[in-house]
Image 1 (cartoon, one colour):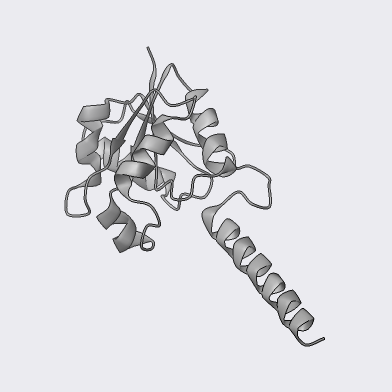
Image 2 (tube, rainbow, N blue to C red):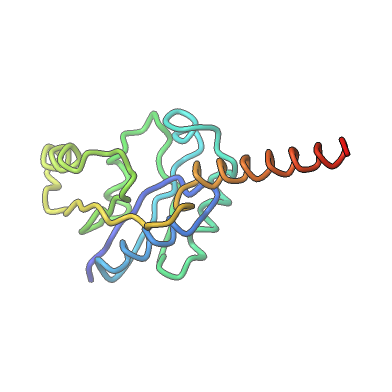
Length: 154
């Protein structure tokens, strides 16, 4: 059985996330998703909109996902999770800023060079990312406010 590991924040679950996980699952037989710890999200990205437990539950409910776990907090080395998941493949999303070669060299240093690291393709859609969705919501809210203001001024 070929085990695949995917990692991400998965805040405001959207079609881009589903596409990533579908592609990751297609690489093997069993997909484990590591959902970023809240403290890691805060340190590396932003304040999470939804907490790690809810994000993990939402991800685990997706059809391609066989198992999901919460990742390590930022003070624990990221690769410490590998013995728990025991992946044959690490699937990275198209927008994950991790350098594939850097991860491969770190795996080599740890004697885990049998783990394949690959990047999957992105979804070609206008709303394939959390930041894009938030920007669109803010845009629609501004348009609505402008429309409401112009009606009030009539």
